[in-house]
Length: 297
Image 1 (cartoon, rainbow, N blue to C red):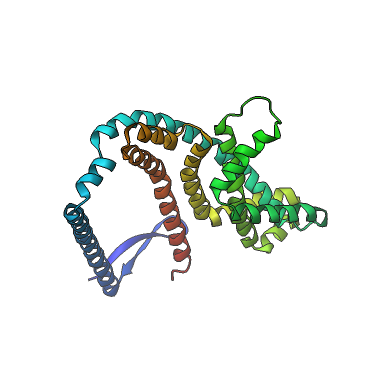
Image 2 (spheres, one colour):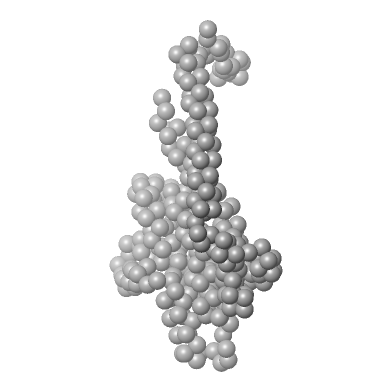
């Protein structure tokens, strides 16, 4: 037995409903059964894995000591306010760093994709910068910036470690973001630029209105991954003495010799990252679905 879906003609008048074959109905029913089966298997496998982990921990001889050292409710409640207060510094640093990385990384990417002969020195400098910065660990960049800039004595007095940490994060992640954006710019077909120029747009207008929007759509998942990584690495500013969430946890651990404050900091960073991880997964799935639907017949 075939069902029907409504359709409309070009003049807006309802046309004859398009029939759905029995084969298509069977396919839809099969897909629904497979979906239900997949959900059931996923739930069972998750429960089994959770049981294996719980039983394995309970049977471990050192589990009581580990539970008291890392998962103490008393020390969790004691450390939570201090670590949460330090997390606000991480959030402020992250907010400034995101803007700085977006601006600086875009400028580097535009310089690297430029074809003008007069830009050759800047292109070489940008290529050297991205190569060097991507090869140095973030913690080393923090040390170089955190102790190198004060050593120049450009500014009299003590510089806030949070400011130095923000500069280091911007310099480090701008190299990664610049390379991601450069790949997106190069992936835009040359015909797009040619068409824009033939319509009378200048080179700057073409880049701003045609190239950048298309490139951002292509590399958005990669950029979100860099942003999620940057969320974690802002915790490294503690090595410069900034009292952020990680440093606050270290202070609590030093006074109690209990490692639960580190778990508190970890949970707070996870909670801060989860919305962006889910957003990244949703957007990646949306792009994949749109690409697949383009080839549907």
